[in-house]
Length: 553
Image (cartoon, rainbow, N blue to C red; front, side):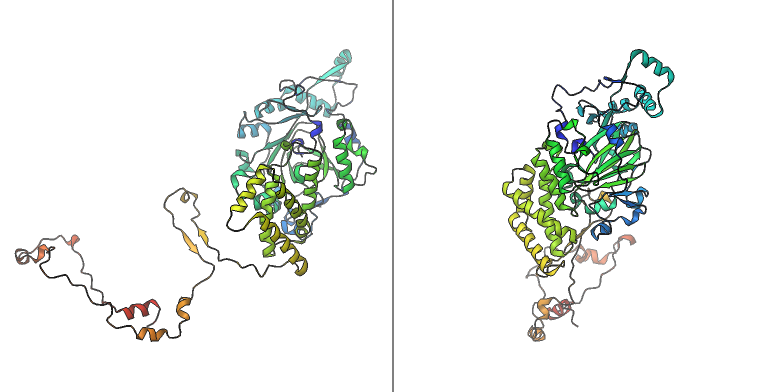
């Protein structure tokens, strides 16, 4: 889905090197024209010539409401095989804007917002680009004319002119595929599919909203002729991919052990950029072609090797996520990244720390019996990885996650958590998926706040604590007493009821109404200031007060 997020580092030049193209160098590619189409990358003709099955390994869903997290966990749909949804976005609980253009995106996020742009021909990263620069490139008249000629053919006048010169200068084809917009105004208009939000590890296990890994929402703006070479998305993440405008062509390769081995060898070859990956496979049985049209959504599972060609200017919304329905494949891809020494900037951010928080989350789910069979099959692989990573703990985010877990009052240490996970897995293997009866649930205290958000910023709001258990009429300590009435009979009737009387002598607080002169005269008090006399309460004895407190008559 994204070269910056894929295992294609050997084909990239560094942004500080002398070979990095400049942002104003967008019309420097000279290509011979002999009346045929000109492509920005040498592999595009080979890509288009591939004759492959369209739906060899593909699940096509016309009714999007059937695609849910429960359906995936129960096996009604296979989470390890690509899924194409032809239904409307809202059928899968997704919200996306309509008719969004690159100019709309720039005006919404800001024209000075920096973006990473890839030169498709040389697979080089262009430095210093902003969304404003990208808008100018998309709306450039010469580029638009070139696109029209490539799609509709060249006019006779233009053919005569080129016959005189023998060459033609074509604009660079640029691809922008790494704009993460979660903390931008565009995020308010987009919501990922409901089944993605239900199984995404980031939403489920990451403890702090402000420091979440930024991988869940990407905007891709590709011009006609863009090509992304074969890659696997970082960290073994799965991808949801929705075309707002335009069209995308895919070649997908299933992630079998043999295919991933061929892919890894291809990555490590010094002439990797000159080799077309499908040529290295002995058979094309595991390869398939797919055309993704406007308003359609594609789900690419973990580990699937894929390349993408863009025949039309396109705007795509998508995201990467980790989940528990294919844990082993996700860790396999992470291990592949380590072996091929993919730089940290091209890997899933905070991958090890997220995995550690996921381990804590799964311990609770295992104790509650709230896991599916696919998760139980993958958890031993995750547990082995956590044991290895925690023993080394060289990643700073992993160290912080382990410190936070060790400081938590809920668990003794990370080592205890890992042992408890193993114990829970052993218990489930013996007795099946069910709650652990030896784990006692603590009464939950729920904090109930008003729905209005302005109460949260105010110093005055009402807190209601609701306990999970209810008390009976009498407290338990009183219920246990068998001789409770005998104890009441032993209490003296008048004990503690003697009224307090002031000491002898004249009171220093004599009321003015007690003076003889005031008694003989009538006071003129306004009616509104007159107080209604309050009847005096009848004093009760200690026995009566205790019986009233205990609910006895």
